[in-house]
Image (tube, rainbow, N blue to C red; front, side, top):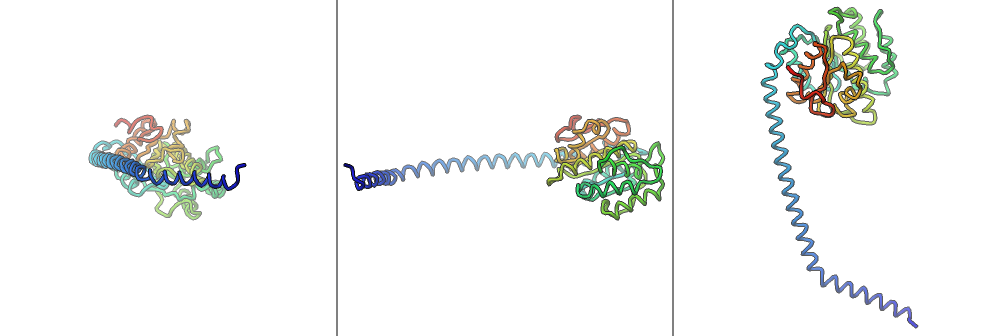
Length: 308
């Protein structure tokens, strides 16, 4: 009969044999493993060097393209907006983008009547009820809001009456316009600043894709706001940075809605020289009664820029 001691000795012998085998083979195995790891390390190092070189080349190309656009941009847009007036509405845009595009708009012959800077509160769902109520309270006598319930459309309709002329005539008095802007500023929806004069065109400048759980809702607010501004005057352009054409960017939301995209021109790379020129040319396109989708992001179906 096989005893328990026999089993124990047998198991011990098996493990002893395995241990001896591991010891005898360890040197060869370790050499092979180290060789494989070393080869993989060298291969990865080569890939990193290749990718770094490609990145540097692309960055150099981008710098060259921006420098080229910066030099020819003023000539490309010269006279395109002669006699036009443009109001700027800024919603999270980079200051460098804002200043560069403003300069190009002026070089195109337009008069920039001023700018409004929206705060993040405009796109905050937690303050949507307050903003809806405020638009009704601030609405000047005789003015109308769009038949919509979303905050973007309501605020866009309210600001459209304040900022934009229809058939060359301001839609509300200067006092009424100042009252609306003061009310929105006091409630924290606008940053303090000088009120823009009446314009016939509006350029809405945003950043890239928004972050957070409420990002899609906030992006929709800015897209619909721009759409209402487009309907209120001679036209509007919504321009954002890289990422703005994504689902959580205002440009992306605008492009995904056929009714908005039919009238509102969009640009998704205003951080680049070519995108800034495209934004100005898109304003000209709006004057001519056309709209397009420009840039390098998702849904830029009409190319990098409108035809000059």
